[in-house]
Image (cartoon, rainbow over all chains, first blue to last red; front, side):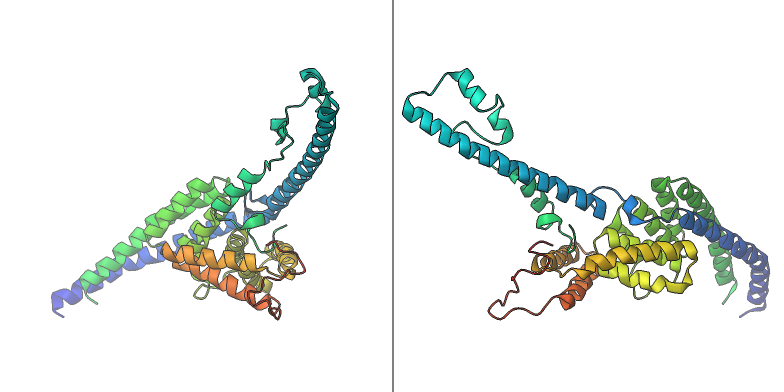
Length: 146
Length: 195
């Protein structure tokens, strides 16, 4: 290395040394600030929202259980009404529309997944399909979900 | 080393000084719950070469519930520095991504290295994870992890793929031996036939 090169090296190092010390201190302060923020905001994962937390999975599971229960009840009613309609038809007492509405409790059967012919459709089918297409395994995917 | 190298060294230190400003700004955002803004700042610091900035980005991603990205930001578990605070956020990322074995292994490492707050949080999550892992993993669940592993690998996301495959492998070891006459291991487990 030439004399000029050595001199340049010394000058550069002398110039850099105090700056490096200052930067090291500033760096430590900055990291400490971040760590304090991270610690302050450290919480349990239950705060995490939809689609991931156990609480959400439990909620989805409960909702599905309620839906399945409703489906079973609807299916049961449809079967019962189907039998009644069949008897009435055979007896020649298949009444007017208002009477038929009363038989069905005045509800819109298709809205509850049933048709007037007594067929029972699974209103949850679309939802299940969406879940599977979302890349999730049946019943919420995680190995230990509810 | 010559004068040019020394100058480059000084320039790098100066650049890191700029990175530190972004760290401080990111910390302020994080403290106020503005995690998207914090993420931007930490990403910039990361680009400027600030050490650990990637881990800080990971913590922000955890708060934003972008768990898979967070796992990638934390990087490979094996080469990671042992830092209880960062490990805690890493465990949250694993938990959020349903990588429960990963979460548990990470929380174990926190142990005595943390203060009372982190230790308490870690213990609570470990209890929750333990309850989940107490159930036998089903074939459906194992398949889900294997599929995720393959998907992430095909997307070139090696760290995630490794995480899912490792989870599948760890869970498979917890599975009961396959029943005779049931080579696919499809017999129902104690927890039913759901994952």
